Structure formats: structure tokens, C-alpha cells
Length: 311
Ligand code: NCD
Image: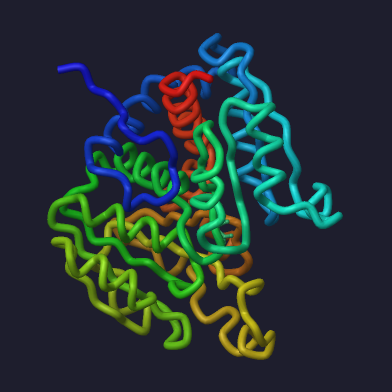
């Protein structure tokens, strides 16, 4: 059977079926050699990717750019609202329409939930959500799953602790949704009471086979988990900075806590102080591997969407 990838846009991981995820992960495996050996393939020669980053980003923007270049395509775009005509009062809709005229696909990051979806409804080229507020971050989830599959060899039958800011952290929202497609997954939700996983996400995962449990300390679950997925407290999403100061540094992972454990540590990055740097040179550190895996996974996404939807 010839496999096809059905989605035109990547807005929410909830739009994916398991076979769609497998398609991208398998394609990423095939492209990994090019990424690792720093080569360039001709797959997207002459194509242009539009990067509309209204919110700051290092890894996501750079890895999309690298991925496009490894496929011999090019990028145009802006890296903050301040450096686009939105700062002069142009609407997001008009800006997106401009980009549609120049590009073969658009990547959008914005502080408001739903902006990528809005843009995908008004342009004809594929739209990729690179993070919308505290909503979704589907391409991060694809590279998280790729990393888990590659390092542990499977995604079924795992116990995964999501640690930190589960309220505002969009990466853990998308990841929880995706894990619902796998068998026998247990999620431990480890967060301060103020930053618990939102009801809507719990509602979604209750419709799947995931079992989950909220816990208030890492010590309670560290002997039981295969993956510690650590996140940053999302300072920029707090209305009152005092509230942030109260919970800052609530959970910190260090080398000593991990000794003798059979697990990996992941983090979408950037890290502030959640993972002590003494973990960096241990076998537990998979967060830099995860960041590097962004390239083959985003190459797979760009190749698939742009080739499937020629202008
Ligand atoms: C994350 C994001 O932007 O949501 N970073 C990323 O894309 N790798 C995590 C974060 O900002 O904390």
C-alpha cells in the first residue's frame, strides 16, 4: 500500500492519526543522514519558506531554517513583531497574504492561541504552527516522539513524567495529546498546584487509553519512569510577576537524583534552572539530542507539505 500524508497544514497534533505521525517519523529517519552529515539534497530546490515569528524563538526558527537549507530551499521572514509591518499597524491577515504571495509554505509563531489556524483559513499554501501561546506546538511533539522512539526504541508501554509548567507549557499539551495514540502509556503530571495541566487537556486524554496521575514531587515517581520530560516555567505568560517569583525554581533535576536510575531526561529548551548543568555530561541527557533531531523531523515536515501542495 502506498502511504500518503493527508494533512495540508500542521496546526494541532490533535489533527494527526497515528499513521500520520509514523509517516513523518519514518520520513525523518530517511533524511537523518543528510542532516547529520551536513549535506544538502535537492528536494526543495527553488522553494521558499516564510518564517513569521511574532514571538521569540531560537531552536524552532533556526531548525526550520536549517531544514529548509538542507533541502536546498530558502527562507524569508521576520523574528519579532517589531521587525515586521505589524508594528506599523498592518493586520496579521494582510501580512500573511503578503507572505502567501512570496512563499511555498508558512511557519507561524504567535503569543495568541489560534493564530496559525486563522492564517491557514485565509491562505492557500501550507501553514505550520510553530507555537501558539499556551496552545499547541505540534512540530516539537513530532521531534519529541522521534527522540523517544529512537533512544528507547518504542513509544508504547512507557511511563513518562511531565514536569514543571503544565499550565502554560504548550509542548506538554501537544505531547499529552499525541501520547493518547499509543498503547499502555502512563503519564505522571508533576507541577506546582498553580501550574497544573489544564482541564481541557485532561478532558482530551481521558478519552484515550492513557492513565495519568498528578503528583507533587519528583522523588515519588523517579524510580518508576522511563522519561522525565522537564519544562521551563513560562515567565512571559504570568499576568503578575510576583506569582512567577513564588514558584520559580520549584523543581530542579540534578545528577545526584538520577544516579542508578534507568531513564532519560528530555526538555524542549530553553532551560533556565530546571536541569542542573551537572546532568549535561551524563547518559541521562537527551535534551541536546532532542534539539538536534529537530532538523531531520522538520526536513520531513517541509518536504512532505511542500511537495504534496505545489503552487
Ligand atoms: C518551547 C516553546 O517555545 O514552546 N521551546 C521550543 O520551541 N523548543 C519551550 C519554551 O519556550 O519553554
